[in-house]
Amino acid sequence: MKFICQSIPDVFVIEPQIHGDQRGYFVETFRHDLFEQAIGYTVNFIQDNESKSSQGVLRGLHFQLAPHAQSKLVRVINGSVLDVAVDIRRGSPTFGQYVAVELTGDNKKQIFIPRGFAHGFVVLSETATFAYKVDNYYSPECDRGLAFDDPQLAIDWKLATETLLLSDKDNKQQTLAELKECFDYHTDYYE
Image 1 (cartoon, rainbow, N blue to C red):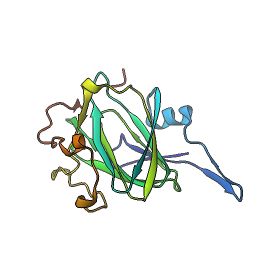
Image 2 (image 1 turned 60 degrees about the vertical axis):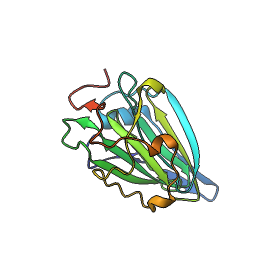
Image 3 (image 1 turned 180 degrees about the horizontal axis):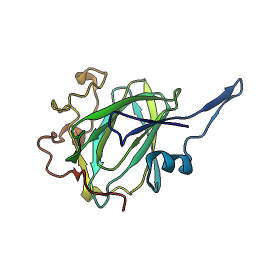
Image 4 (image 1 turned 45 degrees about the horizontal axis):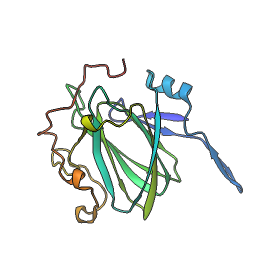
């Protein structure tokens, strides 16, 4: 596995080694020892989730506040998505910046999104099956979001806005400028 630090240093893309032949392929999707060594601290993943979506479905940008903040390790089983992580840690030198990575069933790349980030993805292929690990359970009272079309973020979702399919909740999220509840860069969320 190769861990590649992104433009925001706390976000990593993980490229696995794919062993394939005429029978198919084998790939390690997670190794705790290598993961912990690469990111430099312990993340205790406690739940795996999976979703299937059609082309143009945009899910996000989501985050949970402390004490139920979540780190995510995400990947695509089949299809293709543009995955986005936005730094919402006030005081961070990269506050309001984002990392966008295309994850596909073929490239098997994963992205690690630590606590303190809003996360979302859009399906680029006809359908996509999206899988992710989280290190905290879902908490409705801590669930928050950020507007996918915030002009300050100016995220290029790779699809025309009028073709995007969002939930009512995701269509009504606040902008970064309106965001009152987020994270403090100087707080350790892994204690």
